[in-house]
Image (cartoon, rainbow, N blue to C red; front, side):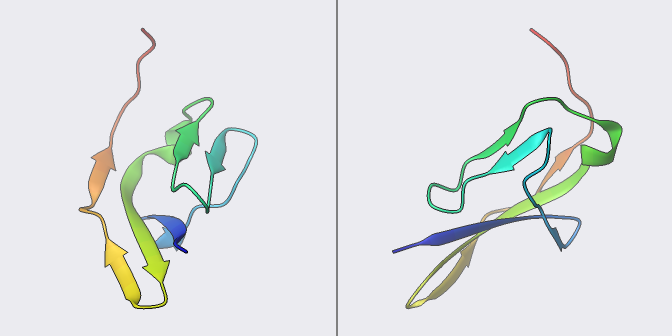
Amino acid sequence: MYRYEWKKNGAVVRNSQYVSVDELTGNLRFVRMMNEDYGTYQCFATNDLGTSLSKPFKVKESSES
């Protein structure tokens, strides 16, 4: 079984009023983007054999469609 963890600028992303992290599926969801949410994100997927990392990506701005 995998466990997923997201980090922003090296710090673990925690569930909040505007951000949700699902440790079982790896989904990262922004309900509302705030300036403090901008930064570099990376996903860590861990199981009994070790940890795999996603390529880091930067979130610089948001827009509504």
